[in-house]
Length: 112
Length: 118
Image 1 (cartoon, one colour):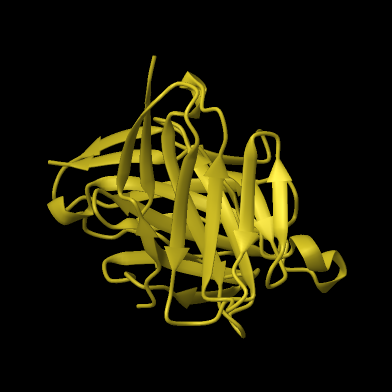
Image 2 (image 1 turned 120 degrees about the vertical axis):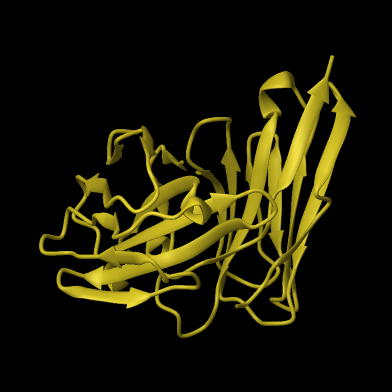
């Protein structure tokens, strides 16, 4: 099936550092979503993007919908210990109603 | 969030047994989805439903059966469990309504069911 290439697979950073991760695809997407999953829980929506070029913030998180509609980026500023978890990108392909294609996730570890 | 609940949270079963995982949502969202999550594979779609009595296969449907007789419930059945079906299973719901254009594609997830097949 359709794949989203998400990178990096994992990150080990120190508290206070900024984090960047991205998702790319060979296909065009209509919607990009970013989720976070804490251990033992389901993914929780962080940011939703609906237009090419859109830049949206949610607290310390900022995400962008790539101009080509084939990629998206998530940045976390001044990381804190509770940022630990797995971050997933997800995209909605044209004509697929509410179905989403998920990336394989970026595992973030924050050290004090 | 209490909007979508999955049960049980943990299940251990034996090879060959039938197992049903339950999913219930309180929003009356049109779309519901079942995913499995395995290391190295992220979230893979098993089945989805666009409305009551309408279901369709996802990426990895073999060995699974779904039904949707009511909008709020979307059970997933493993008819004869195999060890390869050991996984964490997530249910999700999305409104899919044109009226809520900006939010229709957002999927909201349950807390998951961790299934072990011995």
